[in-house]
Image 1 (spheres, helix red, strand yellow):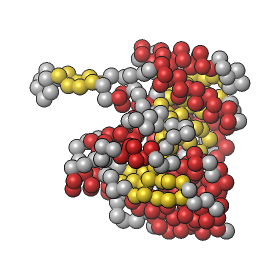
Image 2 (cartoon, rainbow, N blue to C red):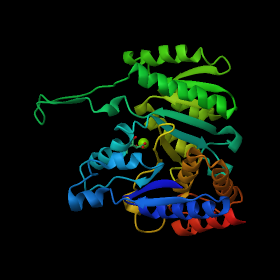
Image 3 (tube, rainbow, N blue to C red):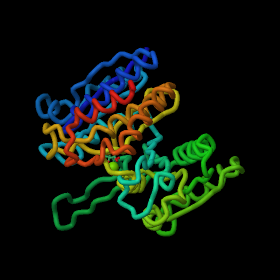
Length: 351
Ligand code: IPM
Ligand code: MG
């Protein structure tokens, strides 16, 4: 019995999570596993009403579960980043220590790709984004805030342990994927001196993986190559902030934010799964958001939980609907309702 915490969150979050849960229910019936869900109201609405982001002991409660399934967090009525940091950040960076942000970039159907002449076989990358350090640690602050002499500082923090564990995970990932067996380290070590730690750790840890090719690109060039030659990449290992940026770029070359999923993982411990897209307030409540990212997120969660058959079934259904052009677009103007897309996936699973 898997215990899953569900946080639908803000904006389009609840609508897309609803479809993900429909798919989860159906695959569990087909494959034959059981799970139990506990839903939490956390998000901007809850914060505005109660002044609470999440209760102090909530991470202890999550630790008793197997996975967390999250929709989206963010609302223009709240101070920029406050609710995101208080919920997504607290779950990722806090004591759950979800140090791997796994973001697959896989093109299912040619017509979804904005790049000329790129086919599904050209775009199958996995970004392994470090998820707890870097500019996200909150170390820094303001001096003379609000005055003409204001100073704002935010520190880029890398620890030996933090860099080493993510680099090692990336090499393991390349080994398991058994594709090109290449790991590309993406950084900006030519300009940011602290990033030299990535260069050294990558080289050292890489010696333990003679079967894996070691590759390197600076983040600016990597963005260029991802557009020009996405077929070069297999596994990308990247620091938190550049990983944030390059995975939006990755999402768009696989078809758009409507399909990109992610896992925030600490192997063997409770981990959190969420679509890469945000809460999209302007589309909320209209039933036009594409739920495929949330559905693909369920797929990633099932892979993590040890249900590879169910995960594959979801991928086959989603990829099949896109390839056959039963779903021609994953944008909000696709003409298909959020729930229609969810139903199509559910029906394809059964067929
Ligand atoms: C993401 C988001 C988050 C991040 C925000 C909401 C804090 O952009 O998951 O990519 O920067 O990691
Ligand atoms: Mg982002």
